[in-house]
Structure formats: structure tokens, C-alpha cells
Image (cartoon, rainbow, N blue to C red; front, side):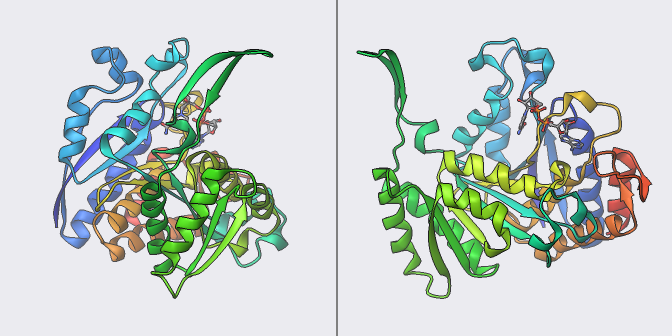
Amino acid sequence: MEAKLAVIRGDGIGPDIVEQALLVLKKIEEKFGHTFHCQDVLAGGCAIDAVGHCLPQETIDVCKAADAVLLGAVGGWKWDTLPGDQRPERALLGLRKELGLFANLRPAMIFEALADASPLKAEILAGGLDLLVVRELTGGIYFGERGTRDTPMGPAAYDVEQYAEGEVRRIAKVAFDMAMKRNKHVTSVDKANVLDSSRLWRRVVSEVAKDYPDVTLDHLYVDNAAMQLVRNPRQFDVLVTSNIFGDILSDEASQITGSIGMLPSASLAQGNFGMYEPIHGSAPDIAGQDKANPTATILSVAMMLRYTFGLGAEADAIEDAVKKVLAKGLRTPDLFTGEGTLVGTAEMGRQIAAAI
Ligand code: NAD
């Protein structure tokens, strides 16, 4: 296969970890006979420094012309004093909007070799953890009407949570399609006991479920879902929810695994296009020091191969290589607990590539 990739290395550890992810991709190209034409583009703080804007038009154009986007991370101390609408992180919102990335997929899985890293008791996680949070990414309160007005209690500010049936239907379909490839169980999370927008959400998700008779659907209120995630996370397969609830629950789910440097994510548009990135940020405290764990970005490449390019065997090869390297005891500083072999970013990437 031949395909075009837009590569955004970004800021902080972004360039360090993307370098390793591309090394692993190179190995996949060699082993499976594919060619990925990669084009580097700027976004985030480095783009502000270079051209005065966190998301240059050229970046948007190159991303739109590509089959997928691989992103490291953006942001850092250097730009922290800029006003909100000029900060590097605005590039992420811009990319989501410009590229129509409405579905955010965040797996939370525990690698056997790292089970001790979880803050949860071993008996809660006995047998491992493998769940997927599907978050709606371009609607809801983060994109709704907002403003200020005077009230008898003083000046007030408001943000509106609104979902159209079509927005709910398309994210529900993504969740059910994912469940069909996994354990055929969807849990839809809302606050239908209080919110009209959640009642609409629940009705539409239930309608979509009729097209997937093999998938079991449950509904949970968001407060209960937050509790169940730490009480018994193994009950979940696919969780589907709104933008704001997904923002919070996906962070909670990722913390259960205890290793922020291990978790990938995908943001998908209609069709096969997607943007792939680690869930963590640009970690300016360890940037350029060969200390960052590149695994989350490497696993993001695996998600890209699986979801955008339909290359399941290639994705499996990367995930197996990660497991092998962890089983051998190799650990970047974030995973190192005194046992095993401490390695840096570059060595971790090299070892994973070599294990493919
Ligand atoms: P962060 O995820 O960058 O870092 C949190 C902690 O985790 C730090 O101690 C960091 O050293 C560590 N860490 C993160 N990734 C790691 C890795 N791969 N290997 C080892 N350790 C790792 O979050 P933060 O400190 O809140 O944010 C730093 C900057 O990143 C901010 O400017 C923030 O806005 C930005 N950010 C960007 C994204 C993105 O680009 N998608 C996401 C979140 C935060």
C-alpha cells in the first residue's frame, strides 16, 4: 500500500517521540512492503515561533490532502503567558474542526508487565483491562452558544450543551462498529435524569442499537459511570459519551492504567481519515532529554494502521513488539520502579522496532 501522512512533531517531547514512531513505521514499511509518504508540518508553539500562528493554513492544507495525521504534542512553558486564543493548544481545536474529527477513541489497557503501575488494587484488575472510550469531539457544551448576561445575583456566564440527533447517531455508530470488533458491549453514558440533551442522546443511541442486534447496550448516568470505572472497570468494553463527559471519563480511565506514556488515541472523521496522537501532553519538563516514553506514540501508529488503513496484522505486529519489549524488562524512566533495565527514548524506540 502507498499512502500520504502529515506529520506534526509539535513541541516539547513531541519531536523526540514522533522520531521513534517513524522509526517503527519504517520497520513496518520494510517488513510488509508498504510506502508511507510523510510530510512534516508545523503546529503549536513551534508554528507560533516560525510563522506567528499556531495552525498555519499550509498545515491545514497538507493534513486535508493526507490520508492520516500523526501528531506528537503541542504547548509548553514558553507560550504559557499568551492569551487563551493565541496559545499553541488552540491548534488542536482548529485541527479537529478543520478536519471534521468528531470521534475520539481512547483505549485504556493494562499491559501485563505493567500491572503494578495501576493505582487500583490488583484484585480489581485481575485478568487485565481493555476498554475503549468513544468521545464525541466536535459538539456539546465546548462548541455550544456561550456568553455573559446580568442577573439579580450579578454578572453571569453561560455555556450551552446542545446535541442534534445526527451528531449523536454518527458517534453511536462509531461506538457500535468498534464494539462489533471487540466484545460486543456498549455502555452509553449520559445524565438523562436531569438533562434534556441527555434524554435525546439516550433515545438516539437506543435507536442506533436496533441496527446492531449482536451488541448489548447499557445506559449509565455519568456520576455512576465515574464510580464504576474505579469500582469495577472490567465490566466495560466500549463506553460512548458526549464531549464533556468523555473528556473527564477518558482521563479517569487512562489513570487506571497508571502509565500516561503508554496510551494512544485516535480522532476520526467520516470515512477512514484520522488523526493519531498519544494522550499525554508535550511534557516540557523532560523535553529533549531522552527521557520521554515513546510507546504511546508508537501505539498511535498501530491505531492508524488499523483504523485508517485497515492493516490489522501490521497493527498487531507493533502491539506484540511493545509487549515483548516490556516483557524483556525494558523501562523508560516513567515506568522504572527499580527492576528491569532503564532505557531512554531512542533505545526504547529502537528496541520496539527491532522486535517487529
Ligand atoms: P503532560 O502530559 O505533558 O505531562 C504530565 C506529566 O507526565 C509530566 O510530569 C510529564 O513529564 C509526564 N509525561 C507526559 N508524557 C510523558 C511521556 N511520554 N513519557 C514520560 N513522561 C511523560 O501534561 P502537562 O504537564 O499538563 O502539560 C504540558 C503541556 O502540554 C502544556 O502546555 C499542555 O497544554 C500541553 N498539552 C498538550 C496536549 C496535546 O498536544 N494533545 C495534551 C495535553 C497537554
